[in-house]
Image (cartoon, rainbow, N blue to C red):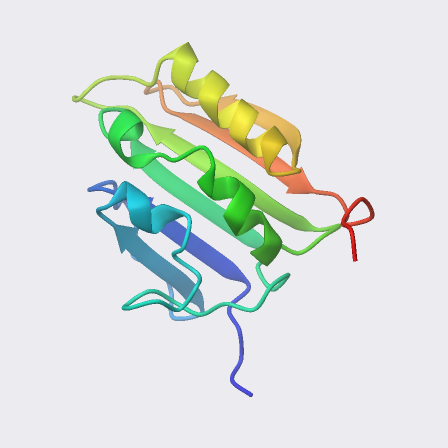
Length: 144
């Protein structure tokens, strides 16, 4: 059995701001439809085991948010995040193209909660970027 990465980075659109290391799964998506199924192994996407990701970062520019961010995708992706220690951080990037609005923040908050995550923090950066982080506390309410 091959070793599974414990960190995943999903970049929506042209928001790349770092070069991930080899032990980080990095996916760049240019279609909103690919977001919810990016760990399913279809086509060029990655096959990830359920409950194997400790840290998931989703990165999107404020100008790409409405076209690329699918709030329902987190519901599909949350099964890949480890219970009790897994976190999901959504990075709303600001810059010369604009800043994320509070309506975008509200959409992300709602999607984190709908995915069964507890909202941990909302961090605002000096440039106007926002990072929302949720924690997957347990699967105890999950039906067998």
